[in-house]
Length: 471
Ligand code: NAD
Image 1 (cartoon, protein in one colour):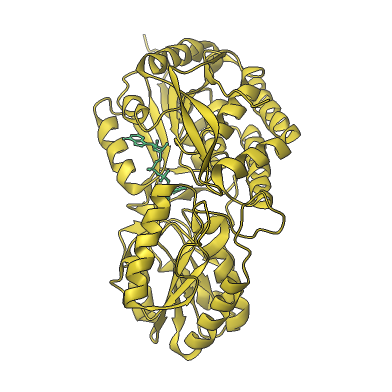
Image 2 (spheres, helix red, strand yellow):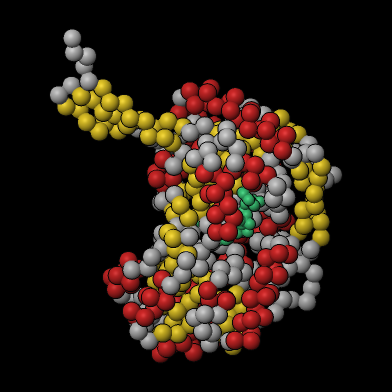
C-alpha cells in the first residue's frame, strides 16, 4: 500500500487542503502525493509553535538534548527507508542518499552534545556582567531540494537544543523525507515544538513576513535569499541565509595532474553537481591543461549515469525539470563557445539525465563560468600566473567555498588565504562537519550554520549587568 504522507501541525498528522504530485526525477513520473498546506494551516502551525515555546524553552537543556538524540536514533533505525525515499524524490544514487541520512544522524548527535554556557564578561568591584543566551522563539526553517534532509538537521538540531520551536518548509519537489521525519518527531517531541508544512512555493513569503516568527533559517538560491531578507526586514527578524556559490578549484603547478583531476571530478560531479559548494569552475596551469582536461573527460565517460535506485549508478538525474532546462541551456551556450570533451547533451531517455560534461576553452565571461550551473557540467580554464588566477577566482558576486590543490601545502594554504569565500579546502573537498562553522561571504549568505557559531545563531545575547545596591 502506498504511504500516505501527512503534514505535522501541533503534534497532529494532518491532511493538507489539497495534494500535489511528487515526481521521481529518474522517470519524470509522479510517484507520490504530497499534502499541500494553505495560509490558515500555516497560522495554526505558527500559533502551535508559539504556544509550545515557553514550556520548551524552560525545559532543562539536558532533557531537550536527550530528545534530539532520540530523533537521531529514530532516524538511524529507519535509515534504509529514508535513503530509499530520498533517492526516489531527489534522484541521488542510494549510497549517496544513505550518506546524507547518516550525516543527518551525526549532525543531530553533534548538536545534542553542544552547550551554550553563560559567559562572565566582568567580575570586579562588585560589578558582575554576565552574557546569557536565550532562545529566539519560533524559527521558520526553509530548505532546498539538493540535500533536503541534512540541511533541515543543520537547522533543527541547534534550534531545538537552544530551546526554540520550528516550523519547517521543504522545497516543493523534495517534500517527502521531511514529512517522514515529521512522523518520527511526532512520537518524540512535545506537540507544537516541530511542525512541517508543504507548499508549491506559496508559503515562503508568509513565513518570512510572519510577525510571530523570530528567525528564518534559509538555505536556497541567492535570488530567493534576497526576497527572504527583504520580507524579514519589516519585523526585524533574524535571518541566516545559506545561498548559492560558484566555487573555484585552483590547481597549482606542483601536483600530479591525473591524481588531482580525479578529486576535482568528484568535487564537481557528486550529487550530479547539485551541491552549494560543488566545484563549479576549475583553473589549471597551462603546462598541464591538456592532460588534466583529458583525464576529467576520461572519468566523465566512465560514469554510470542511471536511476539512483539501480545498483552501480554513480550519477543520478538532475532533480527537477526547471533545473534540468537551466543546465541544458547553459550546455547549449557552452557548446557554441567552448570545446565539449565529454557529455554535452541530455540523455535520450525519460527523466532529467545529463551526463557528466567537461568543457574547455571557454572565456571567463561565458555563462557557464560566471553563473552557478548547479548541475554535472564543469568548465575548465587555464592560467599562467598565480596572481591572475587568484583575481579570476575572486571575480564573482558569490563567496561560498573553494579548493586549492598543491603538493606544497604551505604554499597552497597561502593561496587559500587569499580566496574571498567562507571556506577554502586545501587538498580535499566537502569536509563539512557539524562541529565546524560554515558560512558564505558576499552574496553567498549572511550568518552561518554548524559549529558553536551555528548554535549561537539560534540565541539572543542577554546581558545581565549587576552592582550591589548602595544606600
Ligand atoms: P530556491 O531558492 O529556489 O528554494 C529554496 C526554498 O525557498 C524552497 O523551499 C522554496 O519553496 C522556498 N521559497 C521559494 N520562494 C520563496 C520566498 N519568496 N520566500 C521564502 N522562501 C521561498 O533554491 P533551490 O533551487 O531549492 O536550491 C538550490 C540553491 O540552493 C542553489 O543556489 C544552491 O547553491 C543553494 N544552496 C546553498 C547551500 C548553502 O549552504 N549555502 C546549501 C544548499 C543549497
